[in-house]
Image (tube, rainbow over all chains, first blue to last red; front, top):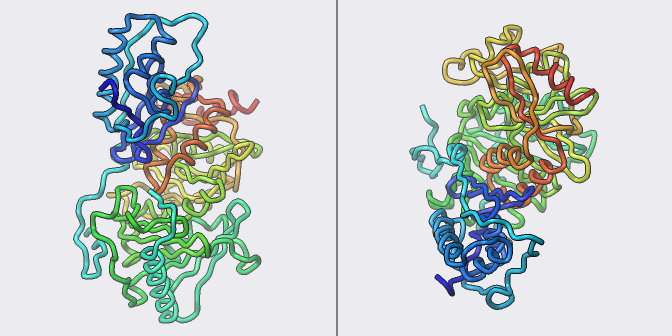
Length: 146
Length: 351
């Protein structure tokens, strides 16, 4: 995990930051997600391609907490993001090597670290569900439901 | 997802479908043509025979302009096999190539767009270089109410997004050319709020789908003059029973309303947006507005708009996020006294 790099799973995923909240939309599953706080910090790292070490460094630069705990929470969070197919292993490395790839302006005072959480919404999934398999005619086009 | 190069397969398929349309048009005699003005663009519909005309054109009637007054910016050819006795060319892709939003894998590139609406059995192809689209359906009777109320969404979305205009899932009503955008998934109360406002004499742009132009000040443009209400909602507006377009389908479908026939409703081509409003039905008598974060509005607006159309992506998401960031956002906590909805919006947003 330590040396494994991850990237955001585009183009399946689109994301946007709006007032410190990151909204993520998954075109494959019809789910959408929200990240704030430490979760948003992790995501900003991933937007530049990042390893677990990069992410821990970025979190330590902004939040006060025990490095081992932060690392454990970040690893669990990465696992969750990967399970949801929001991130995938990256074959390409960050533009700059190792932790210097992720440059996030450090706040003046460190905030208390809270484990990152992923808010998941599934209420729009029905918009993406494929219709039941239709019969097709000899030209291959769907036959109307009767 | 859209490819970044031009391939042979989508071009060949387009030519086949357009060729079939031309044969159908020839079969049916004199061409039938209607021109519509949408945000300054002339969109021309060219029908092979009359079968689809009464199914497609009523929802667009408020945008119709004199024929051939201007050169068409986009021409969409429409035909069906049943009335023209003309076969659609064989499907050139494997059945699993069609994605949930209608995208056909391998048949979309920088020049060509291809989508199959599997629920309707309709095919849309568009040549962005020639500004020429073809829409095919086996038989007009396959067109469900929601397609007749908001026809050609995919084609308009494809073409308009190239011009920084985005088809969004939202209603819009207003006063003095300034409007509110009503957002949220189906069943959230958008249509009820829009119809209540229309009956109170507000300008009406949409209850479900409209066109967002957000370069600079955000505007929404009307595409359809229809509104849809389920039976429970329609009971609140007994005066609208006479403008239901689909009385024979009411057992299975929402009522499709022709607001062009409602004297109080002012069908309006465009509104400048003042607010995003997310309705939620409270069951209380009174209606009130409560501010919400832009991110909450974006969550209500973006997935429901992006999931319904093929080929949407970062451009649409960015436009919607930009809209949410530059426009005040509110909950419309809608009460049971529906006349309060326009009153509350007016008192809070238009003073």
